[in-house]
Length: 242
Image (cartoon, rainbow, N blue to C red; front, side):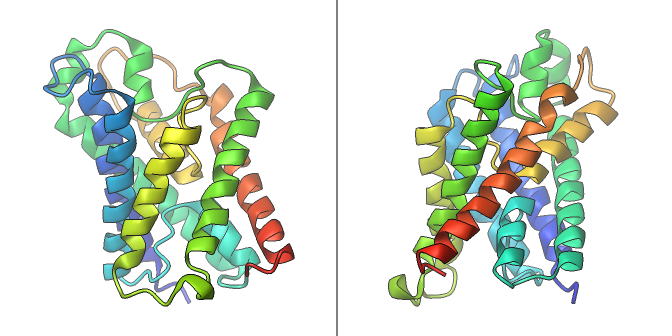
């Protein structure tokens, strides 16, 4: 019943090592990749999802969700029961904490050289470009809606069947596309584990010169993706995609 938990933990850990890692590369002082920019970051997150899904599947998590919002959508579709959804979401968040902590260890001297507190927080979790709670919520809702909607469209029976191993690549491309199109306003979290796990890590770790972890904003990249995923399920089911 819970055979997926090991895979979801390590898959989400890998997701955050590569995802937070690309943000650190592009942001921290002294990094050879500093200034790489948004294109570098969105492709890095696309690779992060691909590698994370491969890891999850290889360790017994055939769905390779890495994301409580995706797991919620699949629960509504009957893939999981509520207890499995809760357990899977918890290990995904814990994987996010560990993955972000590994990036902190890898970049220890660069945190000491970087003075800006927002930069340090930004490689762990998302923040809005223009802060307005309901508009930020709306953006995360829309981005996650299209994440789930496109996953179900891509893997529709009319588009398959696909050869084994194809799925992680196409989902990685989807993440790049969403980042290029909808990532500008909020950094496109679309994933409570991706945002909350590293935010908790930022709160707990003895990061040199860190500021607050901005939990006042942190509820939005948790609640909005879950709401967007639920909406995507009902629309997809209603139009016969599922």
